[in-house]
Amino acid sequence: MTEPATPARPANWVDSRISRTSDALDRAFEERLTGHVVTAHRGKRVTLEDGSEALEFVSCSYLGLEEHPALIAAAEEALRRFGVHLSTSRNRMRPHYLGELEELLAAVYHGNRAVAFTSVGAVHLGLLPLLGAGALPSYPIAPAGAVFLLDRTAHSSMQVLRGVLGQIGPTRRFDVETPGSLEEALRETTRDGRTPVVLIDGVGSMGGLVDVEGVRAALEPYGGHLYIDDAHGISLAGRHGAGYAYEALGGQLPPHVVIAGSLSKAFGGSGGFALVPAEADVRVLRKFANPLVFGHSLMVPLLAANVASARLHLDGEVAALQEKLWANADAFDALTGGRLVNAGLRSPVRGAAFATEEEAFRTAAALKEAGVLILPAFFPTVAKGTGLVRFALSALHEPGHLETAAKVLEGTARG
Image (cartoon, rainbow, N blue to C red; front, side, top):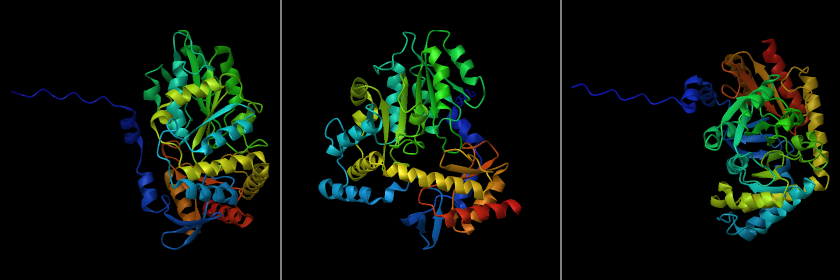
């Protein structure tokens, strides 16, 4: 007797992503164009495991604060006082640095409340389900529930949560770069009385600046909430380094807006934070955000470094570093003829875009041969079949560094 056929397993987003992805990343590792093993780091120079030195445009520490003496001294002192880690949930035991950090961030953000997490991804995982469920007092949800609208270009750390968010309310994607896409999604998904929760980036990790104020204004008539992942924008704008999104919103946190920020990029330390308006929201997060309730706190030396960095934000030193960063961005744009992705924008990311993966490989290899490390990007980070060579600019880059990279780019373009 013939055994019945086993039903095929339904396809899911993991299957789809794997089936559509080429072997480009594997090849980039094999050709040592990414995954660089670093044994030492000073300024924008790194020593690789074979003993050679290279100039890097990979790190997202856009202001170079990770080498600031104040952050190093704070981390060393904390290491002596606490050891490496206080391994407990923040609700059970917390180092004094945690409260100091959140108070300093509140000063940066004009009295709004900041809650520190171990990463921006942990912010998403902890906060978004509570936001959609109507648990945060400052962000009410209609009785019919929430609907989540994710921008197509929003970071993967939010996209991957669609399955989790779908247990709370329907999820749908829109394209912030397509005129009318958000408005159409809002009209279609709010007919049943649901509250829209829109998820976007601020500064794109691969390119672009999202018009966060324009999105907020489009959402306002629908009574929804806006959640902005501004991981790459924190510290880069504003006198106290509040970041791209906060400054684009008028130097304030408008009603119905949440900002998720990174402490691991331009801020110079480690972790992430959620910015909300009221202490009542903070209490809900501390009680119910899973990464805070069941996860460990930030490593103590890095938490102390975060405190030192927050003080530099408030004393004006970060504003001076911003000027150096934007001067370098302008200089690199001039050297590359304004042809790169993000040229002229107040973003620390520049990209050389290529119509094929092979062209991107050739350029990445030429840069590596010249001692310049970059980030080569392929699908699903960029469109299928294309490639991008990303340069992360820093206040620490020197004129010669920029000239070297631009010269190699010009040479590969001519070749």
